[in-house]
Length: 115
Length: 116
Image 1: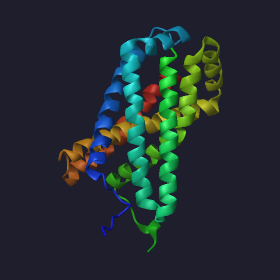
Image 2: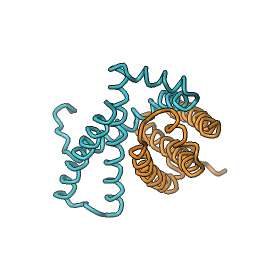
Image 3: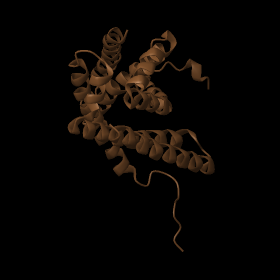
């Protein structure tokens, strides 16, 4: 019989790398967004909406959200692994966070593609 | 052991604040998404967002979250550099910690002036 360890960082390196790649994506997006927002003459609805309606910014923002939610997952999971000792509670919290983040992804996609 | 007797060095403070700001931003996600949603849904809901954010308390919360984001951004860049073995010696690590706090405060101030 093969015994497996069901908890712990089984995907340690992949997630460690993903945490950093998503961070770089978000950092670059932050710079692009900062330039875009400072170039808006007046922050009214029309300008704000058009900022995200263009195909480049819409895709870039989508990529930002994907990175954000993946990044948040790895970060929150690391924190649970550090502080929550009970495996049952930790697993429940993991499920809760995954469900929430999946929902946020759907929500963010809907916001962007409704424009 | 009395945890209060431990004086955390500055790089340690930068590290724990990175974690705290990350948690705060994570918890704020549904509210920020709701704000993003309403700001883009229609001209009326955009105006409603503006009116809501005119309230000093909400503006202060948004500014605090922005500060958290900017801090997480700056500290994150420092950690990426440390991962690449840059600035690992004590002197540079202390200097970059000071820099992270200073630059993120400055950026928050800039954004705060723009927001207010």
